[in-house]
Image (tube, rainbow, N blue to C red; front, top):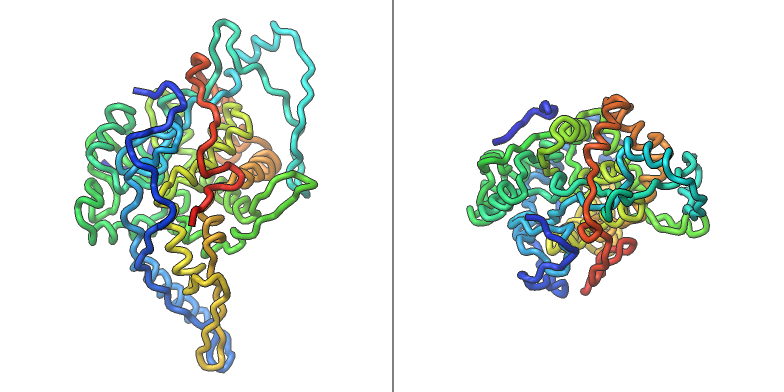
Length: 465
């Protein structure tokens, strides 16, 4: 069943092991998609006169129609790459980049912290904190509280079996749906995509064989009729396409990587930081994130799944806010965010192929600016290299690290203040929300960052082309 109201009221693995039932995807020869180059549109009349507002609007309408007519990459990764650690990754048939958010070591709940602080001896700990990017101010870091329960040999973690994230689930199969609703007990799915993204996908679903989208409704393009699964339409942006390709067209500075070796010691894209600030702001004030946080507050034992298109940006920002709320350390948050690149598997390659063929809002694919002359007017639109496309489709740890330091801590004043000021929770509700998301588990059930062949959190997937 589908809930189209943007503001509705609101067997686990035991170790980090790799799945072995599916062959490793072949990165050497990614498929080429039959995507036509979009039409070039002049920026002025042949005699040099600027376009009128009406003419610009007409061009934008044509561009939107062309984007909607461009098919989404088909044959998305239903296979589960066998180099992914599980947990956090789970193989839900038909859904790429599906993973659990729980199990990461965090701080104790508020009541336990107060007891520990009054009954334990304070020790002095020297920590080295990498400073944030320049021109920002941040609160002084607070030394972490103990993360191991004193009453037993167990560790505080973000609760297992409650929070799941993924890319869009339109390829969900009956087998995957059964696992999702019966084994994982997920009955609430929050869709963060915009209406244009969904509308474009509906056209693709309607024109595709049933076996490609076995459970998707051809009228809506969504998995609206899966028994036991309720889709809540909670867009971060109601009418703007904010998928990776559309974002790249809007925000070409995504490919500009800033190095601040002397100041912060890591690379990040200012474009991603700006985009994530915008996403977090809209997600709170427009209700998408506020709705999910309230679900966790009011229905703490009801698992939820949240996704956007690739499960990278809108999904990744919300996941990072949850992890930061319970006190997961920064490096783990950034590692979890960066997992999307290997998690997308072959889907990532198809996105990159699509972008290198179409360019950033233009033809191209050569990596150089394409110039087309129409009368006396020259149209210059940037093409895009495969390396640039990989950055746009990427989830590099440095981008999340800069967002957490610059925006969440520096501008929002911390995640608690974000929840109060942007999402409308009260301070007591924030405390209740945090405490309800924390549990203790044996040390062998804590999810810890591990290496993945052909990938690093800072550098992303190594393309073997």
